[in-house]
Amino acid sequence: MDLRDVHNVLAAGTRKNQVGKTDEERTVSHLHEFCETDGNAATLSVDDSSGLVHAVCFQTARQKRLFKAFPEVILVDTTHDTNKNKYKLFSIQVDDVFGKVESEMADNLSFCLKEFKESNPAWVNIRVVVTDKDFNEKDVLADAFPDARQLIRQFHVIDYLRKQVFYLMMKAESATAYSAYRQEMLRSLGNDKKNAFFEYFEVNWETRKEEWVNYRRDNVPHLNNHTNNRIESGWGKIKQVVEREDPIDELIGTLIMLQEWSEEGYMKGFRSLGTRQMPIAEDAVDPELLTLAVQLSLHVYRLVREQYKFACSAEASYEVRIDGTRVELRVPSERD
Image (cartoon, rainbow, N blue to C red):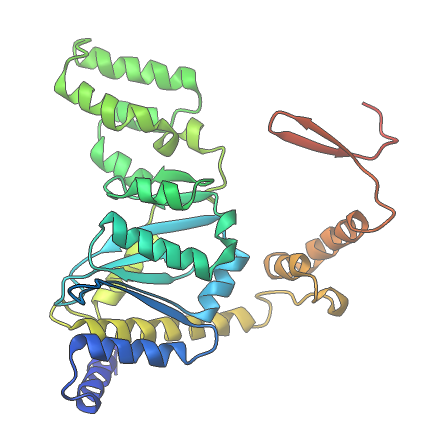
């Protein structure tokens, strides 16, 4: 039995058990059941006058733990055609964090991001947000994550600007190289700064170099996230199961089911022999060492652990020297 068959069986069972209820009532029932699991969270944004549901957000306890461990970079994307109610599916991905919105209106996104932040205190550590060029509410993301840089998927840069000169501009490793390629582009347009394409470029791309040109974006920890392909791959798998004719409650029920399966698969691999190191017993209470144990080999972990233990001990003594964005720690006996 494939996922689509499972989806159909579950949907039929849900309809049979909740005969006479509206899509909205069945949705609320799904979310109540979802929240019965300790740590899971779900919220709805409802219009007070019309009763229309504008947005639904939900997140599992495991998703919260994953985000807490790896909060620095998030990927953001939306997709459509997943339900007959024409709600869009909105995703903030660390591993898989789903939210569902009626549209990409600023109010709906603000609501989802507000709920995300309230459920995930580690949001203050977000430093990079990767989006599409066409993502409509970049200002909302800027307001929600003021300390994060927004980066555009470089795939879309290539898609929009196919000529080689634009590719060279995107890959420019210095301001000098970028200026030279930009001048070459202008020369190819007859040095006409009133050219419609050049004016378009100046307004939409020149003012946002820090989002798509290498020398302006490679100074942030994007962890080599140049595309949102992982999210789009997830959209493709979801759309193999759901259909645009499905009611909203069936979509949410399916998303919860898929998320549970995904987490079980992740945890199975996570616990497999050799995939991670368990911290030394006395370190298990230290969240820093606990996080390091997941990411490093045992050999490297022990090296870092030794330095970390010394740095936190009473014997450690440092001089802190700050030079612009560079912070240097030195033992007082060291010479310049």
